[in-house]
Length: 177
Picture 1 (cartoon, helix red, strand yellow):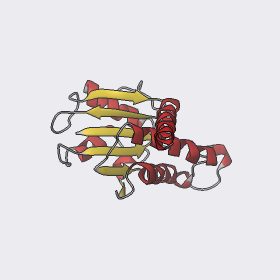
Picture 2 (tube, rainbow, N blue to C red; picture 1 turned 90 degrees about the horizontal axis):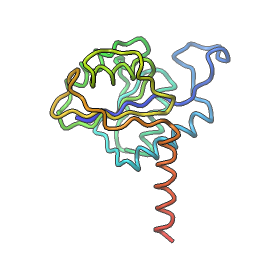
Picture 3 (cartoon, helix red, strand yellow; picture 1 turned 180 degrees about the vertical axis):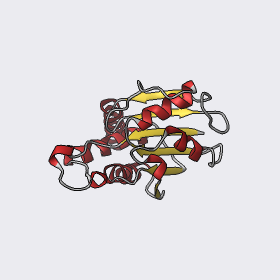
Picture 4 (tube, rainbow, N blue to C red; picture 1 turned 90 degrees about the vertical axis):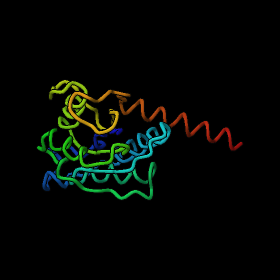
């Protein structure tokens, strides 16, 4: 199983938002950069079988942008296991219900996503694995997935994902010429 964990894009600052926290949206810059990061995931040949997201608007909208670029036919599935405040063990429990050959993309929040990575690769939850907004990490495991059995394949900052996507996009333009 491959698990790609993606933090939502740049959202409106909490102090600038008067609505409910779960409805705080992406900024225009956040939308643009999330789409560019998705292009990087596409260039990495990311072909998910499942696309899960937090129910919070900023994560859901990031997942929709990702789907549009990477996997337009895949359904975006909202999961409470990715909501703010959910425990990393809850998300790992969800992974255990999936086929061993699944490629799962999860869009959510910090600190949970970094804690999930640490749980999968170290067997314990550590707070020092933070993902930046629109950054992503890929953990793979032979067969099913369980704590301490994962292997970190890559950890990419948003700027790196955007550069990978831009390079792939430029290469396609040259090939068409």
